Structure formats: C-alpha cells, structure tokens
Length: 87
Image 1 (tube, one colour):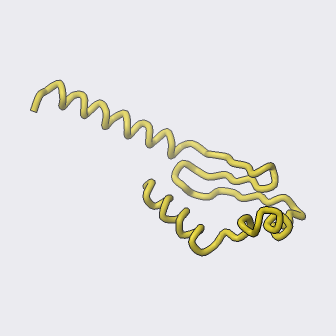
Image 2: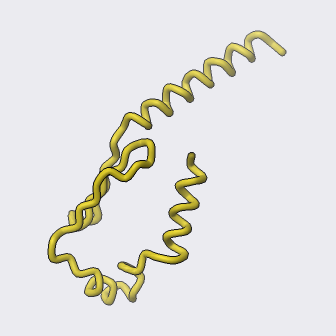
Image 3: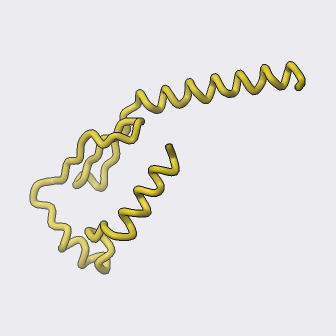
C-alpha cells in the first residue's frame, strides 16, 4: 500500500480516538421547556433527571392527543436500539 495513504489513515484514526475521548469527557444537558431537565455523560450514562414539581403529564398528554407522557413500548425500544447503534 502507498505510504502516504497509510499515514493519512493513521492520522484519521488518531483524530477519531481524540474526538471519541473528548465526547466521553463531555457532559450534555437538555431541557424540555424547563419542566424536564436531563444531564447525560458522553459515555451515554444518565447522570440526572429533574422534573418540575407539580408537572402533570396527563394534562399535557391530553393537549397533544395522548402522544406525550406515553413513553413506553415501541418508543422506549426505539430509543434503546438507537443508543446501542451509536456505541
């Protein structure tokens, strides 16, 4: 194989390892309107979930046709499979 190509591939591998390490050392934050706040490590470890006191998912669910607050079954499996694919 061409030496320049091997050097390029090695450099790309090193950059990918560095990027992965940076992601793993990062903590990500997400918020749903300030009602639900989530903290997740770059290793996909869930650190913290805060749900505003008094939040009533059933009231929100009825406003959105029952699609919100019913996070189970297929939705949960879809998220879990998406997380496992990203590993």
